[in-house]
Length: 121
Image (cartoon, rainbow, N blue to C red; front, side):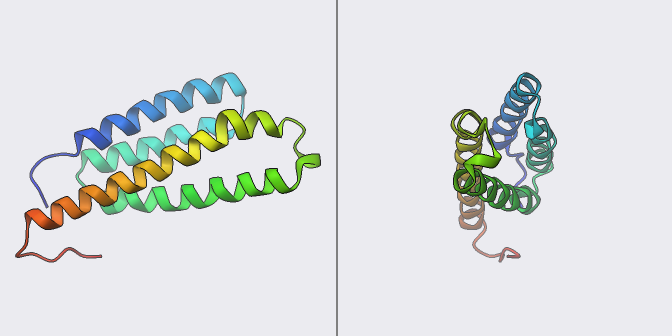
């Protein structure tokens, strides 16, 4: 693995953790838990462990998409659903998907830098 830390991913995750803290506090919702999940990604990036970061990103995408589909299909059970969908869930999904592709980019970049070693994947 490279000698450098993944500072770009680290600062993106820290920024998203701060955003989740603010949004979660203002909405009084489960988005407060996203602080932990973004913190996990930041810690993994700091420790140069892209697999650990990706291991958090994939379930989060699945959970957020599942929640969004449930809220879209069952609007009667979620009276404030449009607010959560518009201002919380859709941006959260987009951010996690973007981070997933950024991690994939970093993995491929790392694999090209070390042609003699095979990555464990």
